[in-house]
Image 1 (cartoon, rainbow, N blue to C red):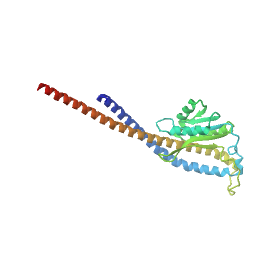
Image 2 (cartoon, one colour):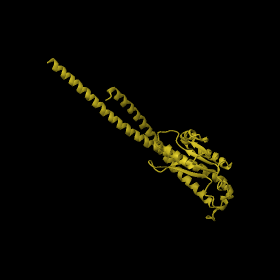
Image 3 (cartoon, rainbow, N blue to C red):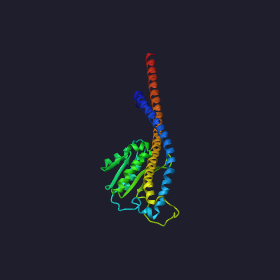
Image 4 (cartoon, rainbow, N blue to C red):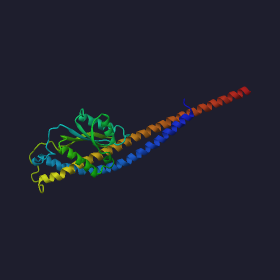
Length: 282
């Protein structure tokens, strides 16, 4: 059995750790509430823009646009959204596993990362990362998403990528997250269908409308993915820190019992020595 000094040192260390992880839990809970509010505001906007674009997908005129028309896929680009930090359970591992599985061997993949964990992951595997947007993840402002969307649009328009996918984590609930790899470009399935909205008119024409709505769609898609991922990260960290607090409490309780048992043993030993000494005197 360890000495009381060793037990007390261990007790102090675990107590300090519990205070730290409890503070991290509270910070993550606060950030989660912020991200949930932003997500509830962002989702309707994204769904509205997506609905407008989905209408365009079934129009023959829209299908002629380069961002709607499928092309031969020689190189595929991926925007992989992970966390900048760890201590969030399996959040990063699950997303990176899903992204890597979708890439296959990944030799022809052009990778862009939002989050340093994703950047470090691909660099360790010798995979080329074209660009990284670590700062965009913490704020997830529309301007950040717009900047990323412009870079992706340039990459796709130049022909360097035949398709672009976004790997992110969708927020379902505090305990449920889904790692997803969704196609960003080309938009739709490229099929030309009959006009479903014959009365829909675009002023001055559909080509001009497309030039305006496509950048908005790309930015809204990326911003939604950034906020979804941020909410999942904070909820995963909150759950992880909550489990750490509980584990620390269990260890503290166990150390308390061991310390009391050790102290009781020493008292018993001292009493035995005292009684033995009195017997010798008698």
